[in-house]
Image (tube, rainbow, N blue to C red; front, top):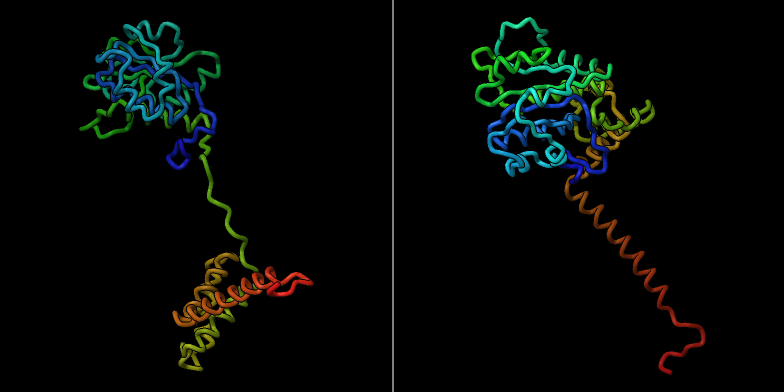
Length: 290
């Protein structure tokens, strides 16, 4: 896909991280949206426990929005116990307090804990429950820690894919040390004083011709104020070039611009005519009419 859409197939696909386990997801659309979020944040290991609509699922493919490889590599399991059999450290996502003596993490702390265990060689899973009921208490008891988010207590249930996205974001931010994909474009070099003074001369001359300085007594202070405005901006060379052009256009007006354009076009036409005339001269010794 084209880079402008946010997807660039020329760049390497980042994969790995903790496994993401979806327990009995009800809708293929949510599986696909979760896979999309996984792809966004460098998570590639999807495990699906007993999906209600069966597997494979066309809606999941459509809603993955191009994260097909996550779905193609997804593993299917009959229950959470089977999905966790080779996992050393599992974190269960839940919005409800379960009365269990387990560590409780926010998404950022869960991401850091996952990273520490993975670095130590222990495989990690992030476990998410059903859209309607979440994880059962028995399922939470199979996990080592609890993940919850600071949400509105009166409306704490998140969409499945949204929850995966929030946790995935924190995972990738921690794994990449918060590196952003791009930075601000390099600015044109700052204008030096000589260029700035030339701009002041241009601007003040145009203002003088336009009758801006109506009071000779106030002109020095007005000039200082105008210069201070531009000093505060930290103008670049490109900025000055743009401002010079703007002043020239205002001074010339439409008639002046049209006259300058006509003069330019006439000069270009004359050069073309001269070049064309030079290329069709008679060869030496030829006599017209023979």
